[in-house]
Image 1: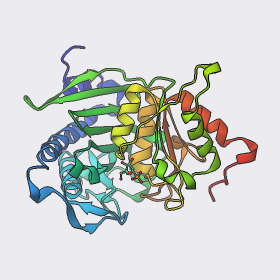
Image 2 (image 1 turned 180 degrees about the horizontal axis):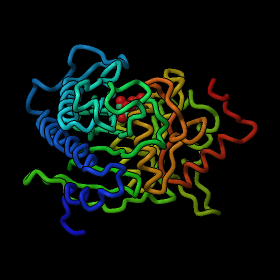
Image 3 (image 1 turned 90 degrees about the horizontal axis):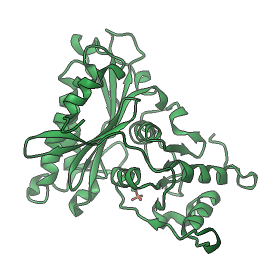
Length: 343
Ligand code: P6P
């Protein structure tokens, strides 16, 4: 499919999405619209001082909310509430979920969870940032107000997931469960074109992404795996892997998806359950990576099997090339290093 826009692609693949009357296209058109607005503001952030820096308050994570975080959050929420296909949204920036409690939206079948601007502290230093989103079919009664349970479903119940990366170009990468496709935004005509059809992560990789400043606090299997990544073994033609970590999950994830590699955010002393949030960071990226023949695990097993206990639950996170995640998982299960079961 040459020069296919994401809109044309959705129509051509609509039958893969559980929902007949174009719900996916309406959900993704809301996301597309919001992402174009956010991308435009990010790209001029260096010029317009009024949207740089802190919004002067903390979010539910206790993290200093950047002005663009707030702007991105509002932009995506407004776009998603305007099409009558979403009955509620949960966001990293909001303590609780937001119910779109009106007749039209209460009749909607889907909910969206999102991190509207992950890695936003990197904007001031011009590092790529991203938006991560996850779509579930509601489990509460259609026609009623959305409920918390709609947002606390295991990752393998997702019907769609994806991310925007606002980098040297803006890209939309998403899945509806039949593979992963990437679309690059052409700002000249305001359209996303299919640029990365049927994305698959290489089974092996030679890149590991982790904040090695926390090494002292990692559990033994993680330390051993990192030591393996750094090792040289001429008899097995093993050379040291490259360490690539830019402190922006979507950017690290996107590079590893294309080149192969593993991203790790293990439990640390400061973040005993890891730093990343299960519902709107780890689960959607886990759906994508499994659709691209990769793997995503926590210290207690497959990410997509975990049923969230609360919206902002954090989990240790290891995601990327199948063989690299397999190797780390084998190390985790060695008897002498049995991880303490999550209590
Ligand atoms: P650290 C950004 O705040 C983020 O959530 C991810 O995008 C990124 O990978 C990670 O945290 C960086 O965390 O503790 O290494 O600075």
